[in-house]
Image (cartoon, rainbow, N blue to C red):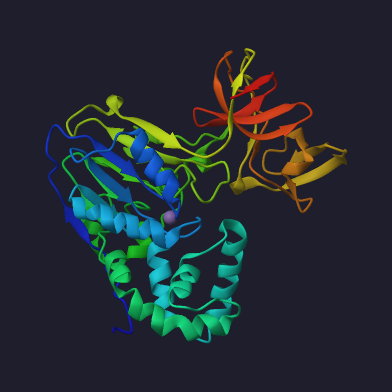
Length: 377
Ligand SMILES: [Mn+2]
């Protein structure tokens, strides 16, 4: 048994065969049912090539199961998984667990238990016959966990950090240097945790870079939208639908029909488990809207009402009414928009929340209000 695990940056070159579909997903975060369903929706088969661009575990209900499923899928030979920052950090932490850091990790486990019902480490320890009721249980289980799951840990540790093909480059976070080979000196963490890569990189890449990690919804300005986002100027395709980090998030699967096809033929499908209903009325979209995201969530309550409050959004200075259920600790707002979606009678809507004025829904990956009647399926 090795006492440490090596996480080194690995860059792989690959030539993809013409005539095969290229499917790309990322940030599954322990959502095994989402992963299976999105592949099923895409009619995934052996003729396809599937890239899994990092963050397979943590923040979801079935973390170890998802990892095992991915490992099993890899036996088919047409699956290319990459490492994500959460995968890498988890490995590092498990091997480095000590008296010094175990309290922090225990708190992390408690938070995940509340958010997702479980966590990767807790699942591993349970399999070894330990239950985690205090920080000491983590230290007690460490050696058994490492011994029993060495295969799984090595699988994750050996995943490539960057995969370069003829037309696309895949990486969980983003490239720090424009030329792929120049990134070899960057750490796994530099490359898997590049926040807001599409916004923050100064580079215009030669090939399209497909990245996960940063939920697409955080790039939105006027409204929350979760579908893959193609930045044609910088040549970046962001695909993280926020699965595991946003309750209304989705798992995206990018579909590139063929390695040689033009960018405008790229499409996607998504999967989430939000209950749906059909619109019974038409609705026109708003021409102006505000979106308060996790990045600028600070608010001030100006007038508190029973169901809605009149607030000021600190970042934009705009004043608006929001449902009280979207206010947290009086000073913050959960992802909110006053955007009215364009809706046609018969449209399928995912119902996120309901209030006396209407519904906050998701339609084709975009979130907004719908104030008409609904027919439940
Ligand atoms: Mn990530």
